[in-house]
Image (cartoon, rainbow, N blue to C red; front, side):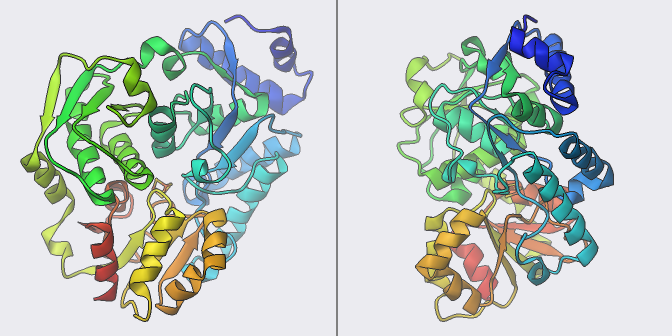
Length: 400
Ligand code: F3S
């Protein structure tokens, strides 16, 4: 891989040991994937923030990088942490975990990383534009950035995202190259869809077919006349989880769909496919056992929080109900009075975190949520049973 003079100096350690290590990671990745150069990135989003996932070894690595003088060169934001940074006691987080989680955040902050702790950085300040090269890590955000925004990113791992942040560079391969963004399969949707649950269901239906085929696929989805930002973020989380996808095109909705023809190979999704996908996450035994309700995977938008407030006004929830969102969104919810209404009803804001990355294994039996991705990890990571419901029905479940 060809390096510029400035990149060679980083590799030689002229900008410190942390930057040298970062450049070594990128040079190795570039060689493995056959990149011929490094590209400048406009922003980075780092996953691997929860102490529950990082553990002591991860924390020590970050602390060492920070004390080596590592400093980011571009706007860099963080994925959710394992707890609400300001209000972790309300979530039932133990003090040792909280201390370690704080040390993780401090190490990142010392490097100049913005502790937004959210998987929806595009809602507040980390919003790449069409065609811009970025290095993001969170799978749902990567899919959203590539597909909905038309930005260009591979799905970075923890070390490669951090390396991109410290150098402002990423190897030019994969989704950075136009030839790797062409659709390979037409998906014709024959049912009308509405809401985050329906779009999550579509993500399961398409994702499972693609995953089973074991062929790298970029779908070109037709038959969806409109989709809101919230529906698209739900779809991105779902299709990234069930199909491992980082890019799709949706005719008339995503920007690059206009550049490509629909491929000849076609998969049809009809009502019975969607019903089967929905059944897949609705365990019959969970119906009477739901003791945990959560909305906000991916993190809730302000409009979604307003909808929760409207439906909880003057009522009381009867189950543990988490509202997961980003700190900047929560602050506006505070100003708008939504937080007061929601907290009066007994629901809890789990800001900066989510029901997947928080350490809650063993605390609940069954979760109700509108998120296909949250259902997947609730079962796989925490062993919970799952009720996969439309947004408003999730709120009703909390009130039962
Ligand atoms: Fe975000 Fe956590 Fe879901 S990181 S996409 S809310 S699993």
